[in-house]
Amino acid sequence: MNSTAPTALCTDAAVRVRAADRTEISIGSTSPFLRVVEPRGRIGPADTRRWFRRNADGLVALLREHAAVLIRGFGIDSPRRFEQALAEVKPLHAMSTYLMLEPGRETLPGTRTVWCTNRNIRTGGGLALTGFHTENYYSPQVPSFVAFACLSRPWLGGETAVVRMDRVFAQLDADLQERLRDGPFLASVIAVEEAARRQRLSPAVLRQRLDAWGLPRVERDGIDYLATFKPAVIEHPADGRPSLLANVSAEVPGLDAFIGRRLQPHFSRRRWAIHRKLWRSSRCRRALSWLTDPRGSLCRARASVPPAAPARGETSQPLAARLARAFVHRIDVEQLAEAMMHHCVAVRWRRGDVLLFDNFRTTHAGMPGFGPRELAVQMYDPAIIRAHDTRVARVPPP
Ligand SMILES: [Fe+2]
Image (cartoon, rainbow, N blue to C red; front, top):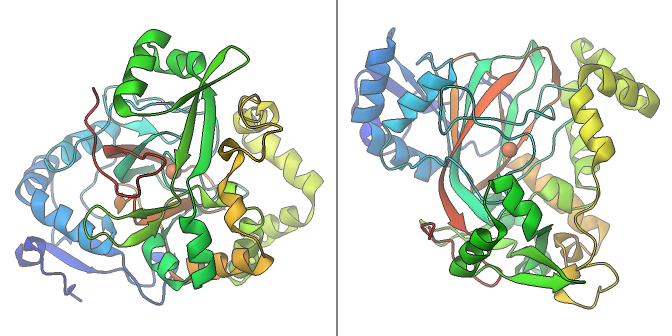
């Protein structure tokens, strides 16, 4: 089944472009958007790189049109191959660093731009859904595109779920849309000293960069903070269509509970019996979490709220407004969950796959599962998201 996408890829006889079939996705959307690109025959590493070089523009056009592309059957099963293949896609510029690096995010050996998803926590294939988010929501530098490569596939579940947030936003009722547009919202607060330490920069150099990017700093009790505010709704740089940009699972209380309920039929089979049993008992869940993911459990136990000073006790000030403010009624959260599940697709991983998606049109999450699951990540073309600017524009670092 060839896609109707009018891209150059469709005319390349060496590959097929098609919609995903039922064996490739575990949660399907009624309006599927994901496209699969695969070679028609066997393809070696040298041919792979040549293919990516020759079809770079077509691949990016496909990505812009469909928001998510699964590149399957090219055997991209190591961080080095991943970096080499995607380096041929010249319209994409891979990030080698970004502001406010999260703890546990490290580049993989032998590469400059391929990252582990997170050393400290499981980002899918564990006991729980990891939460739907825009990549780097808590950083002012948000990648335009993201790619995951599957180095090792899970034995059970562990899919990556992708949701079209432009379609989700279009489906929400007008009141909620208006409240979501009534930003900006506080995404994160971090002491400049801490942000500089993570970046391996001096605080003075970081302050210069923040000023050059027009990012606000606030001082409280003699401490200098970088406060990141963001609009929840951005205009997509390609066509201006509004899309929701957020770590929705973390910022919208109760959302994951609604999503979990909606996903129950998906976990009704016998193979999920142990997971279901554990989900019913919070004590079992915690114990197993320590056994299967000790580093993540330790991190979660140590996790503290962001530096307290600016927002605490100042709810009348804009610093305190987080995205949750837009969700006044329970039904608001429910309709967001419903819309997200309506426009969701969950990709079943195979070793050597690459999933490339538009970070401004989608959110993603790691599904529960079991067994080894290793994904590597690349991020491309960062944009600075400013508090009062809903237009996303690439801003070169100063
Ligand atoms: Fe992510």
